[in-house]
Length: 69
Image (tube, rainbow, N blue to C red; front, side, top):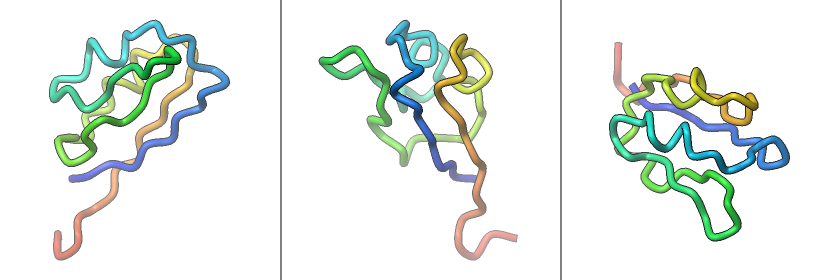
């Protein structure tokens, strides 16, 4: 299962909670203090980043991979 991310930078305060809870180190904080997707291929679509974000700045949508049943 893969995921598509929507990150609302205007809401992100750069607290790093989403980065800390990601089990696959998919997310990172940029030099401006905002979250970004550093390695989307590692994402397992667990949704921990979305669940833990206190500012509702990140959303994860699970998408089926091509050829998956």
